[in-house]
Image (cartoon, rainbow, N blue to C red; front, top):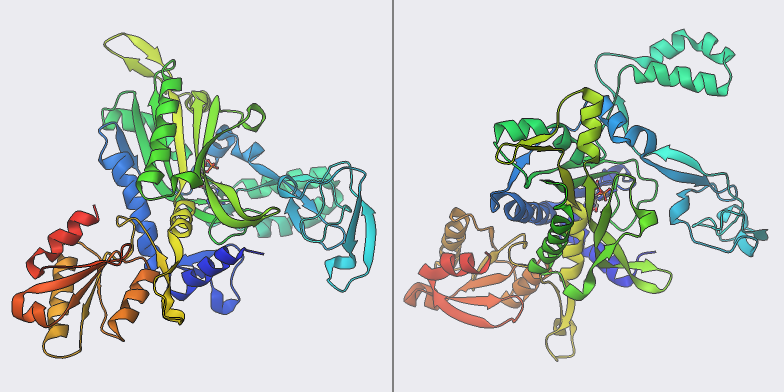
Length: 501
Ligand code: GAP
């Protein structure tokens, strides 16, 4: 069950058009979401902020946009085909399928009590926690299947092939084989045309290392950055867009000379943590967590996660640390593996020093959806703003950093007459012309219009009144302080533009 705060955020996200369940009118699809009109702007602003800060404003990073489907051997070399899997378990009582490493821990041999079939009115049963030391996350039973590895990559087939036909043609021979041999034969048939949806964007940058080196004339230390969709057949999904099967990554592969990697690892940990704080995340809700040795991926020399304290439910109540980004020192693992697999030289020759080396890689790998969710959760506030004893005493406000706010300014005519709507529309057009997302709203009392804009995080509301037409002034109301000031209409674009940088 989500917590109260999370429930409210999910409800607001749907009501105001940030996030919708995918295919909702068909009953929805587990762990798949669509971004609504405001959500798409918010996420785009997050991605643009990342691209600007990580690529455009740096001379040492260039961008790339690789195809989602890559040569299947890429995934053999990277280790994803053999090792990118989660330990899966089935509950024999309620039939839930879950990840062993996410299951509630329990002492092996201890008693566990659960309901038959996992039903709330099922018979109360007593069981024993098995040697694996966990129970079913749904019904609490210890009666579980053995763990088996489940590969997270989505497999599909490229070309006009129909492997079902081939299987059908060989069905008799296949039936005669024993289990393992039959599976091997089936893998062989399917594998002939099998390709995979990428589970990370990183590999596209490794296999293009030489292309970028040659075409963009880069030399270490330098980075290749990419944003794009990745796909993982996740078993456990929850908490809106936190863990989904289709998501967007923002990854940087930063290539450095071996020996300088520790220094660069420290630099990127600090730079990436500061990025979230600079965009308004509450510093106390952000931490860098170094991986313990046993947690490290086989290719990593070191890794730290940037984590945010989400308002998710956990055993202790509200709040749980969740990973926004992993910063890893991947050494020369990837380039060396791809070089060995392809026979291509992926080393770098430094002409000045006549040194040849395979660069080490520092990888800050972020998720656009998780970052967007963190910015949304962090911005959410309920505030008492008056003392009249009615519902108007409270407001819900999203205190987005102005760079991230989906709408930067809303312009209201005080009344729907006397040329005010036309003037307001003119100001909206001037803002939009300057590339500033602005909105016109004339419905309801101005106070109500402020509240509507607070709820979607619009930093500035501008009200056109009689003085606007007579004296050329306009009232600007600040979302956070709720203070109002009067400025000249001619200054509106510069005023808003300056404050959303
Ligand atoms: N190339 C390294 C890599 O992919 P990762 O920690 O598996 O590392 C990087 O992924 C980031 O991608 C995560 O920190 C997270 O923000 C995001 N991410 C990973 N799996 C995700 C999922 N199932 N749903 C949403 N975001 C995900």
